[in-house]
Image 1 (cartoon, rainbow, N blue to C red):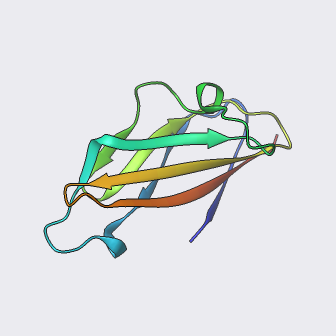
Image 2: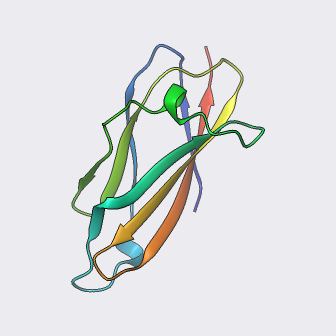
Length: 100
């Protein structure tokens, strides 16, 4: 399921994905092996511009990160790749649309 989040360039806040619907009983998220990457409309990695460094965290079954900046009119794909203690890897995307 893809979500759309609208933000203005000056805004900075957390976005996240709840992976509870796909986790088995006793399965939890593993922060060390999980990752979050941001891409622009051409597929280029723009994580350093869109994601605030060292803000990825796990809250129970939610993998989240703080977003920043962005160019007005642009859409960015933020891919959440959640690794688990069972050795599984799940991925969900959030689309970030920048408006003024």
